[in-house]
Length: 307
Image (cartoon, rainbow, N blue to C red; front, side):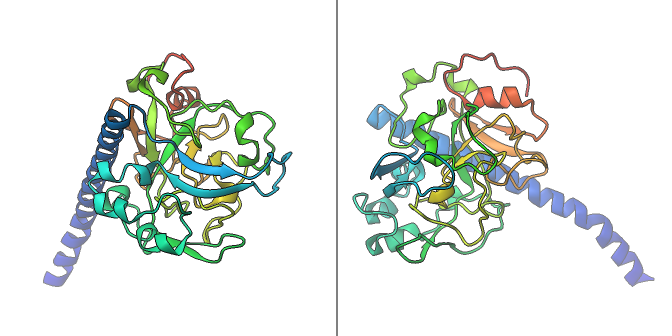
């Protein structure tokens, strides 16, 4: 009888304990994004601009479409790598040779180092992400739970299997983070409280390294999600997936019909987003897609309704 009563009490208490732990993890995740937002603004205060989404050279003209290889040669370092000093990770920043690609052996130690502030505690991905660049061997990179927002544009000419990055320069991206382009405060015409900077995309859904873009890289876990509902930059540069755009077909974060390549948070309530005023908001899967797209853009001048 005593054992039965204990078992009953345990069964009643366990869900409450689990809910309490998840609530604590959500708070920590939101705090991570607040620190990331503060780091972005400290970076801007130092350099009078925000970090670029990622840095990469292009070797030739862009392919006509399909799944042709994208002529990216790196180095690939992204916004999360560039603001390490502002994330109180100066020793790690000093280990990086930014003139060399992420894949260079000289950067092996840095790229595989976990950064606690870049990991949501509810993101249960463990260990490094293994990437297979087409011509440069296997690379291990430390995981990230967050990605930058490329914008809320609705790219045209994108078929269900089209290569998004192949047409990168043709797209009217209007978000905060771009390839080789740094945004300034004056470029945020919609106002900082109406513009997404960084959002969640847990590595348990779509593996994502904090270091940046690996040209030709393909993570072991990732399927080819080119052109799906959650449009991303990085199909042939995985695990770049450094930036996400809110597409007209993407739905809200965590939407059952969406792609894991889009914004996804490991929380029942939705995904956390850092807005450019430094605040953090939870956006659920049932958000109006036009409101979500407007938040993703910085200069579309679209009025923001209720989330």
